[in-house]
Length: 192
Image 1 (tube, one colour):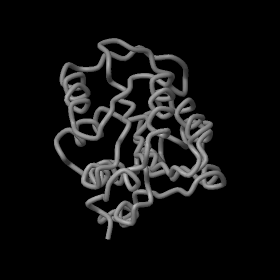
Image 2: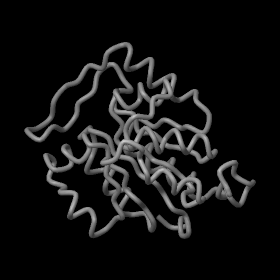
Image 3: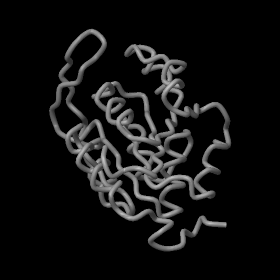
Image 4: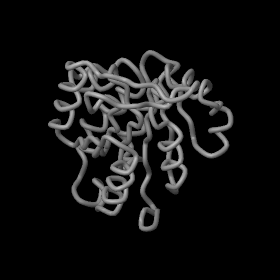
């Protein structure tokens, strides 16, 4: 994307295949992206034909392999200008809403908020009816009322923008990455 040079993005992937190819395509168009994978994401990526080792040829990849999530320390060094979680399962959205950070992806979201780094979240369960592309073909999905309420609640949290489709994610990325960095706009509470 033009105008995004110099911006580093922490891109979290959870265990959803909903628009996964489109999300990865958007990530590949950016000049500086690190992927943060939940354990479920590593499994789902394989099922959808994206082996993690192949992604490592294009991205720096962090996997959810330690209880303390050591990669979150990069947020305290001011390495990232934006966090993207795309796609985000209803499970991850609920955890983000309630402040639970027990996976690598929910942890980077929490650290971003604590460091006042904006986050874009592509919430999978954002409408009462949708069609998702499963490995075997399209599948109708009917998110539960609690999933819809959590998506709405997430949109109300500070430093968070929720998007509901790949086009919205592309527009939000373009807008966010053209804005001044947190570090250039004001000192971050996470700066040493």
